[in-house]
Every structure is written in C-alpha cells, then in structure tokens.
Image 1 (spheres, rainbow, N blue to C red):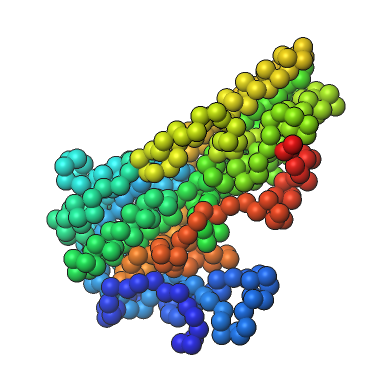
Image 2 (cartoon, rainbow, N blue to C red):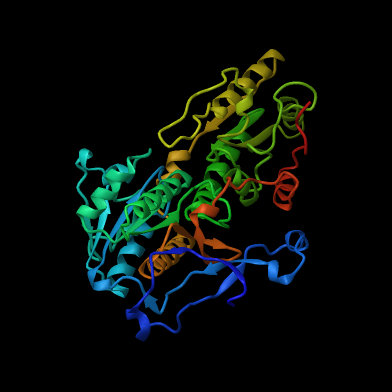
Length: 432
C-alpha cells in the first residue's frame, strides 16, 4: 500500500493516543483507499497500473492526535438551509460525547458570523440531551448566515473557547472559508483541526457522489409535480410550471423529472434553449398542447439566465451570482405567446424552493448524515484537517479541500441526460 498514489488528508502531527473505540468496534482503518476513477475512459489514459490515484477511506483510526478528555469541539452551519443539517449536528455531538468522551461540544450560531466576537453570538453547549430530538425537525438549531469573516477574528474566538476541532457544515463558499482558516492557523502555528461536511442541496460539489439532503429534495418534488400535473389536466391547454433549485447545475430538476414521469419538459442550466423561433421551446410546447391539451414543465432556477435583457444582477454574501426569476419569465412568455395567437392557455406556477429546503431529512438522508458525522469525528480526532468527508464511488472517503474544484455538472451527452430525454420525450435540441 505504501507505493500507491493515495491522496491523504493533511494532519496536525503524529497520532499517539489510543482510541477509546478499541473495545467497541470490529476494526480500525489504516492505509485503505478507493480509486479516484472507475471508468475505462479515464483508466485507459494511464500507462501503468501504478499511475492509478486513490482517495483514503474514511473510518475510525486506532491512534488519535488528540486526547479526547481534553478536547473542545466547535460546530458551525453556513449558507442556505438543507434537509439533514440537524441530523449532522446530532451525529457529530453524539459521536464526540458518547464514542470519544470529549470535554465539551460548542455550537456557534449564525455561521462564520458566530465566530466573530463583535456580533455577540454566544455559543451554546451541545449535549446528547439537547440534541436528542433535533433530527425530527428541519432547518438548523445553530441558525445560519452567508458571507466571509476575518480569519484572525475567527481563530481568536476558537482560541478563546479552547476549541481543538472545528466542524464546518456548508457548501463551496464554506469550504473555501475552511481552507483559508486552516492556512492562517498554520501561519500562526495553532494546532486546531478543521474538517468539513459538504452541504449543497443542488448536489453539485465536485468529486462528491451525493450530498446530504439531495434525496429528500427530490422526494419532496414528487407531490408538487403531481399536483402541477393535476392542475394542468383540469383546464384547457393547462401548463403546470414548476421551478426547482439548481443554480448552475440541474441535478434536482433532472432527477425529479425521472422520479415523476408526468414531466414533459425539463429545462436545466447545462442545456441551452431558445424561447421563440422554429424549434424553440414555445413552439414545441404549442405542439404538445395541440396533441395532449396539457403539459408539465420543470425548470431549474439557473436555467435560461441568458434570456434576460439585463446583464448583471450582482452577487449575494456568499459570492453567488444573483439569478433572475426564470419561472416568472417562462410564465409571462407562455401567456404572451398564446395570447398573440388568440389561443387559450392556463399556466399554474409552483415555486416550492423554501418548502423543500426547510423540511426534515428522509430516512435515507438521515442515515447518510449519521455516517458523515461519525466519520468526520473519526478523522478530526486522528488529527486530520483541511479536508471533507464525502461519498465517492459508493464509499466514504477523506477529500483534501484543495482538490475540490469546479461544480459538478450534468453532461448533456451523458447517459443521465439521455435518460431524462427519453422520459420527457422533449426534443434533444430546442435552439434555432
């Protein structure tokens, strides 16, 4: 195993303390890994088997960097809401206290803002008692915020409370913040481990097969799309228009279209379409209504942003580009198009985004959150830092934050999108 090219997490130093799990688990993990690529397309480019690269498997380690009895843990949740946030907080708390017996667990409120003294967001101590039932609720008991804060001020707060391990739960902006905190900790020679649990309801973090909350989100769309279908069928030329999450990638919209076969059009950021002209969306929709007298359209929020006249809408506190409302644009354009032809149309518009984001996780996501939380604790106690725990090719692995690159997009020529096209029967191309 020593000769394999394994991407390992950065560590704070030599692990010398015995794990308290030695009498309660079947085995420890050490040096085990899974290949980064599993397709012949990627593997075929390599000249030698020794060129295969691997990610280190997650799991409990036999030796720890920290003495659990002396450890104070900090937890912070950042960015938008996502099903499963409370599940992860609970998993981290229970694993830290029940499995490792740490000194205490602190929850810092309102994201990175809660780690800056001037905001006066005092932390709350998390225990197995006050987190016992939080997984039954949506949202986050630690609250959240967007935007960066000064790294030195964050570190000063961590030092003030004696925090040895910080768990950051958030998306790509949060992970960039974690990376910068680690870099500054290194410059100041302060041995605090920072481990991330990736959160994005859009399921678009690169290298991560699945992010928590995504399955719950897709499941939640089923009833909404069914209701949109019912509304559309109840009126002449009825159109059920559903806008779903997906800023730069359309995983939720596309997965929802596959989960509920009532969808006739799925519009995602990765595949451009025209509204007007021969073969454009509106003409294709008109043909569909002439045949079936109803249609269901699912659109990701980031689709068709190039259709707006305005160029720049600025960014939010996380640095994300502010999006124009594609759902309202489509609603207006559909009404105008059919009105100009003297044809009746009845558009029923659904925007369930916040209803989906704020719900509690389903059973499968809850199980996944438990695994993510437990393995994040295992990694941090062993001294791993500047990393995240995530699923890659069906296994939980340690991923250095530095390897998290561009967002994960739907491949318009890949099998997944081909399956969507077969399910919806929409044209492969709706551009003039």
